[in-house]
Every structure is written in structure tokens, then in C-alpha cells.
Length: 335
Image (cartoon, rainbow, N blue to C red; front, side, top):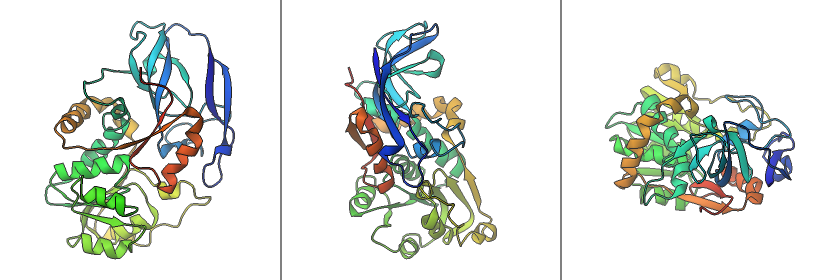
């Protein structure tokens, strides 16, 4: 069985490009006891991919010559473990490849719910939903009546965090790029205000949108966006560092925010978090997220790019802001 794969060719300097990867075709390895072979259906394209290929961080770096890391959803083709059978739907670190051969213990079996698209298991019912749920509720601890600001609010995690903020009774202000995305936030998602960082002065627009200051910031961007938020934080504010996508492609570390002193004077708390720390508690969040989804309290959108060969180009959409919602790569048909 020939396997098609993208391997890491070199570590990028600056923006990631297709030349940093190499397309290879080689035989799939034989199946060992305790392993399963998965046919990849969908791959999640996430900003974390840029961190994984830069060097060691919260996970070991992808090594040069290794298959590019990626969270995926697929179907079991063969299994030499009693916990999985052919046809089972699973998620895990399948990587950028047509077939993944992995220990069954590294895979999570999914019992698909009627009427729920499979892409939801790489979004609201997967790592994206867990990130928004635990990041906001466990780290940010919003209270009814408080003001929540979410950067990259039209993105996968940000849009869910913003809606969970509304469910929690907050006034929610989203920061996004372009009138279409901002209109989606205040229209379909029901946010109280949106700031268009591409066409507005963010600091000035935030002053208007947050007349009572900012109590919680769900931060996905960093840089100038974070600095504008810090200028508006209230006493005992909580800044949830979920991501810093504006920094990932920089060749040198960016200077620190000029309003950082307000963290001291406002007795604020900044806390970074990684969703993998919360995976043992997924059973707490997934039923709640599923209930909100079924009742229409959570809305989401995905952009599906077809074809494994298009993975490197598609990844770049995350960093130029051209994607509309969660970016997912379709590798094969669902059934």
C-alpha cells in the first residue's frame, strides 16, 4: 500500500512556505500488534503547526524528514488491537498523510451523533471546542455583567470563546479583520460590538466598545492588539493567553507591550494555557458543548480545502487571515 505524505524539509525562517515541506510517496509500514491503520478523511490546520516546526515548545519539534504533525479524523482500515474495528471513526495525531499507522492507545474512537457533520469533531466537538471552553471558563473565569474581549474572534477558537462569553452573561467585544467577519460577529453570533483591526484604529475603537473597561481578554493574537487591550484592563482583569499568532512568523522576538505596567497597577493576571493539559477533563466539556450545539447556542463555520497535496498552501491562509472559520483539509471521502 503506497502512502502519500508531506514531510518537513527545513525549518522556516519567517513565513512558512510550501518549500519547507516535501511530498513523498512510500509504502505504508506493516501493522504490528496493538496498532491500527487509519485512512485520513480530514486534517485540522491550526496555527500551532507553525510552533511545532519552529523548535521545541510544549511538544517536541517535528524533526526534519518526519511526517508533518497534524490532528486528524479518519476511519480504521485495519486493526491489530481489540479496541478498534475496521470502519470505526477515530481522531488523533494522524499527520499530513493519506494513511496513519499508530498505536490504538494513541487514538480516540468517535461515536458520531446523528445530524452532526464529521467536521464538527475537529471543531466544536474536538480540540477547538475544548480550547475555547476551558480557556475561557477555567482560566478566564468570566462573571455575568463583565466585559470580555476576544481577539481573532472570527477564527475557530475565538468565535466559540466569544459565544461562551455571551452564554456566561458577559458583554462581548470581538476583534477581527474586515467588515464581513465583524458583521458575522455582531449579526449571526450576537456579539455586542466588533473592532475591525484592518480598517479601524484598534485603540480608539476599543475605547468606544468598552466604556466600562475590560475584565477578561481571550488573547489569540498578541503584539499591538494585546497592547491595546492592556490599556483598557480593569482591576483584577484576567488575560487568557491562548495564542500569539501575530508573533509566530517573526524572525526575532517582538518588543514587549508598552502598556505592560498596567498588569501591575490593575493587579491583573496573565495566564497561558495549552489545551493538552485539559484532555483528561474532556468528558466534562464535550456533553455541554454538544448540548449548546444542538440547541443552537453555539454556531460555527468551517472552510474545507480539498486535496492532501494542497496542505502547505492552505496552511498559509491562517496567517494572512483569508480563511473563513475553521480551516480543514479534506484528504478522502467520508465513507
